[in-house]
Image (cartoon, rainbow, N blue to C red; front, side, top):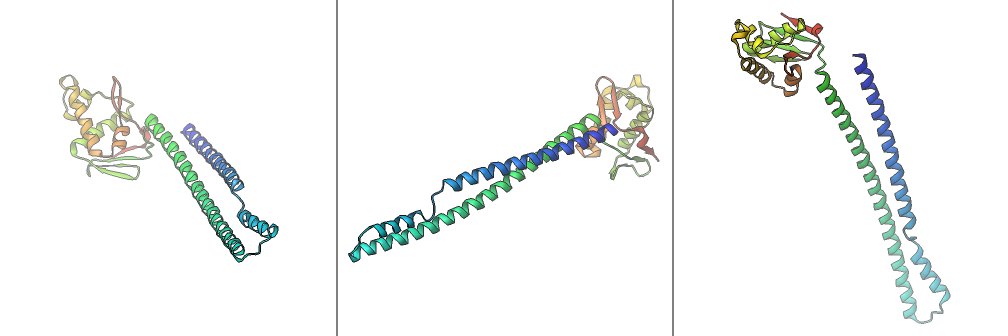
Length: 233
């Protein structure tokens, strides 16, 4: 148990470091891209400056030429306003892109952590702190969950619990023999396997049922929990 605690703590710390490094990298990349983008954009007043220079350096006398310069000046003002709005749109899009990338990074790290946790559960089984089997109620209380079982499923689970208390692994034939009261030589392996399948179906939750009742290759079936947490009433 201490080794699992250390590994989980290390995984959390490494995940936090990964998130921090990823967010820093995203911010640096986007800030660099924004700086280059804004630096390469033309000056909003460049057009107006050219019109002003043309007005100063040219000897304009006719009303038509003066009117043309006025139109050019108005066009320059419109261009400056349009470019300023483009800058604002680019700035908002960069903020939105930053938020989306950071959220995607966080979700990816959370998904990776969840996958590691699920892999650990598959290797070690469910972390059960309490397993209470109530024969009178035909109910099993697993941690904070309760499962209503059929009488047959309750008998199968009780047999598995008793064998776990004795550190035994039961074959399908042995399970059928203990439930039915027959000799193991008179029972078939498939009958016990059918009882295990019905127990898993009754438990309902696929992850709970598959990891709680473990199939040991070429040996049989057992409860993948610590025997100290088992109680039967």
